[in-house]
Each structure stands twice: as C-alpha cells, then as structure tokens.
Image 1 (cartoon, rainbow, N blue to C red):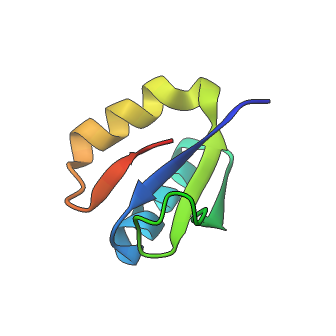
Image 2 (image 1 turned 90 degrees about the horizontal axis):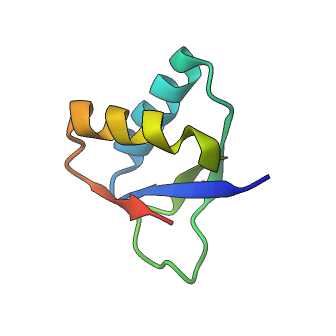
Length: 71
C-alpha cells in the first residue's frame, strides 16, 4: 500500500485533522514527522494515498493555518 504524510506546524491542527479523518472512517496513524522533512511540530498524520481526493477536500474546506504539505 502507498501512504502519504500530512504535515502541519501546529500540534493542535495535526490532532484536529486526525480527528476529522476518524469521523470519515479513514484509517490513519499519528507518527513522528520524519527528520528529513524537519518542518513541523514533531508529529504528522500518515494515511492511505488512495484517500488523497478526500484529504484535499478536507484541507480546502477547513483552511488549516499551519498546514505545510503532503509528502
């Protein structure tokens, strides 16, 4: 399976995003952000790449201020 990592600067927004995924029934893990990204609050959300369309929709609707990117 292919995965993506959704990265935020703020821990609270990372957890809020994870909760939204949970409400949609999307499987995810909260992980330590890989050091190679060295961009964030230290935690990120890892989820299935085939959920990218839904993730893009959520990010567009919620307008997270600390969203950094999808890797």
